[in-house]
Length: 366
Image (cartoon, rainbow, N blue to C red; front, side):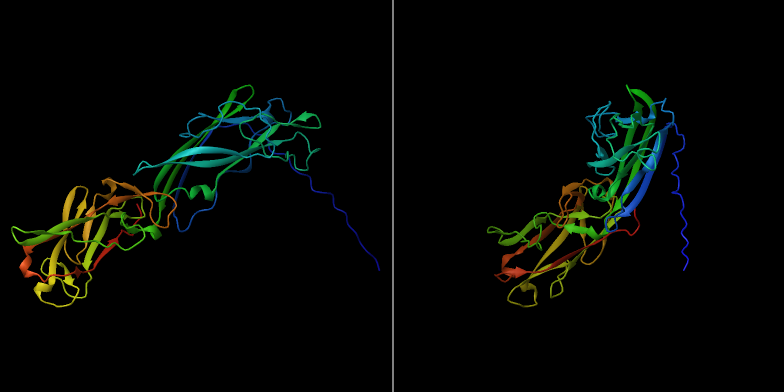
């Protein structure tokens, strides 16, 4: 039996192409719903070469990056000069301020970055790449056999875990970074603008702040006037509408229904004596009014009322049940008004009834 064995030489790794720093600006425009979050947003892919020159005369192996501020995250917060830290194996976190246009809410999101050095020869690594990651704001480079590194590459991303901090709305941010080499020589500028439109349709809700986790139980607050021998009253139910669009809907549709077991009286809404009966002496009638942006809007039973001006209405910051980040909703308190009637016309005792509030949001995203 003959055995044939062919030995092939190991493929030669290619050097990175000669590369010189060039300024760059990118616009990152994305939309998503929080029920289907995106993965990590890659801003620079691993081994994105910023500078490589084989002879090493340009000191590209010592390049580092700086922010415009080490105290404010508005354009990215990180060191503004060379830190000279070794930090082998370290990533860099850059807090970046995102602002929601409708509410003005601000959230800092960490951008994660790292640099890798490129060797002059393949003596220390098969593919010319120095193994460990390093902080982007340090010029410390190391060497290969006593020869300084001759190139620098970067990678940078926004992780999906960080993006979860952004609630529904229209978010924007800008990141500015400068590329330098020692001592503080400026080589290039890099900037990113972010424009995120986020929806949260699964979280659309009618929120009653005083009844956080339970169905509201509201009294009509009836008061007896012993002189006029009448009874009547008024009560208000705090209510806030969350549209899952960052309060940027073209409109919101609100419907209030009397869902009691018997038809309501002429006012459209009624409570009935708990002991039964169907005549007028067993029934107390009331009206429902919704306050939207300072205007009192009478609501007819079962008739949808469209609320416009949602994108300019006053907002309220709340933490909705089941959510971990606060959101802004539109306050729309309800007023239940019971006109005064002779007390002799109503049967003494307890009365109750049911109201159902429904919210409809546009299907078109902003």
